[in-house]
Image (cartoon, rainbow, N blue to C red):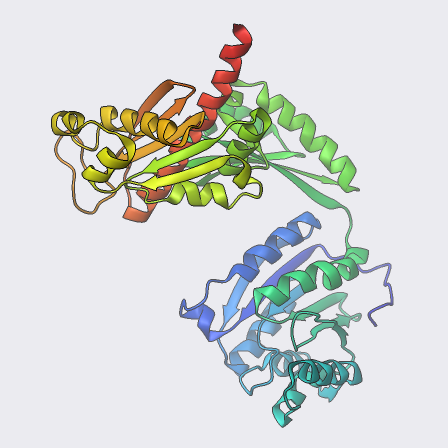
Length: 431
């Protein structure tokens, strides 16, 4: 059962099967699959298939039969609750030719859960107390439905069933399921992520094509995100420590290539890297945002410790607020318009002066779908950064949806700020 170790069983491949009609129709984003995929990769377990099935017992039974025939580990999420449409355990049991029986541990758990909440243990709650014959439970300290584990020794496979709510799935997997599964794994996969800004994925591919093709273990793969490129270095090793050493060597080699100048951080995001640099210097930052509407400050405040460096933010959408709050000259706007290098420059300088900080970021642009002209069409964005009185402005020609343009504009502004902060440090050292 749960505590029994089968030395000959090794989990090489896994499949994730998420249950719920709400996932199929787009009411809920399937974040469980992304989370579990990352954890499985860390454990060195490969994946070749993922599926989503609605609340239909026959289709779920068929999906289980298909999945169990092509993987060593099947993980299901969702469908473990008290109502009739919570059918995961029934479908799995039918697919494997098993019956469901009441489990004392699950019964005590659900009764205790109801008692803590001051609710009655109802007839429908008994559905959460049933397990396929031969299965065992994973304790759920975050909800009512325990997880389920089922070992199939005759075919050397394991089935795991987890509740659907991510607030239950994630901690239960990390604290209960992963330690159990690790006895059946053979090695680990360790990854490092080099985050790049100011360069596109095709250029990265061109610069590193030979190195990426030659890399086997660790492997090197580029991924494109909104306004950024990520290089993932992944190593398979017997232990995490050995994998980390392998990755670190490859990361060092990559940083020494031409690509290194575009890397703003390893295993860290733009906002985190910016906050870290500001904290290290004891500097403060403020933002003046037009088309991004506060996105930059939202990114910064999502980072723990941002309160030590972020003074505040002005969302100056209208021309008059740019003038009143930031001191942008009316003549500048009249002559160059609000979306211009000159306005971005004065916005960055103005927010530094108004909030007495070393670093000021500004963004002004046309996010669409309306606005712009022949010279500066929709997607034109000016980002400015003022660091200790020195101001840099960049013009970006972006395309895509309004949300995409705003997100990328915010990241371009943070990227310019990070480069300017680091450059200021270098300039001061040179003096």
